[in-house]
Length: 492
Image 1 (cartoon, rainbow, N blue to C red):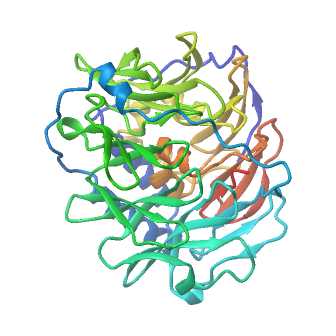
Image 2 (tube, helix red, strand yellow; image 1 turned 45 degrees about the horizontal axis):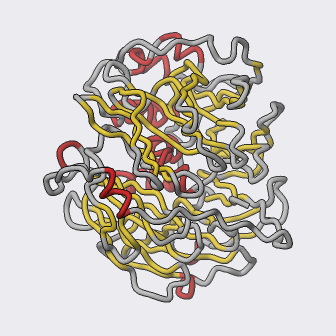
């Protein structure tokens, strides 16, 4: 089900697709359709996968709300006074041991870790605890894993040391609620805190923070829906984008919930904001004359520069420098999906990296490459519009052949623009319905890349089971690591 193929013409072979049917700014319709496609082909899927989908529906229910009316945007001088001093990233001690491990959620909904070659397997949780786990996140230092666990009586957050015999649920539980169940979590860069989203009242979510060692009660920072954020380098503040449409807001808050800078912009159509490495630059989309302009703020000078107005966008900073990758979505096609570009902030110049319709993209840890996901060539040639029409369901719902898959994983070298198509694949339901629609937020908290930027970990559907592949980015046959629904690499 995988094929290798060197790109020619620096990714120039595809043009953006024709327009799909349906309203703009609603990714859910196409993702729902493709999800139904998988359901048709995967009648024999496990009960665990369906349990995860039930959890996703809770998140979807919480995604529509209104927020207080927006106030005027801060003037640059006021903004600079409110901004924190940029902090240099803390260097890793040379004598610290290398982690380089992968965490998976297996078919039973339990957590395991292992080395990239499948050795030193550690089962961290077991079915006997009656907890079903989702989306484990490595702490930045690689010593612990935070994971959401759900049981019949509610949902909680568990922090597990990556050691054999870590399965002590009462001791490892740092948060639990029967009603305010967690749905997403993200470690602070200093390993001290976990910021997470929890269900609140109807159509509301709460942004909370709790100490990673469970040494304090959780604190509610803000309410609304949806929420997207990035941590400051020192782990003391969060750049938050909350709400949508007329209720959207963009602000800087601290871990106590105090607003440090409010009403930073009138948010455009985007999801996760970004703070560049070192903290000097921020990025987000700002509404301007009915479009969404990419805005970069220099926190040292207060200068705001606008680029690339479009209907919608997704963005992500290079983890090692001041380059910003982004896709522009069109109201005529699909929000947030579009050609992949990179902005050099110092030069103020933008370059096209891929003409295809990019669904998601992820920077390598060394900042030299970007992995991205598209519809495969066959479906792309038919046009996204084909997927939106019911009459095409039977065609795309046929059992996948050994060399087929409706998504394609590729990687591009940012400096040269040259790249490689790695494989066509069929994703697991969890990856398709929960990870991909919010990839820009998950890219901040959960890594698909190996720490040395040589490989990616990818959950795929293969025959009658979900498997985890390790995919070398230089090309070659993917390695079958284990069976599992989702997997993430440690950041070091």
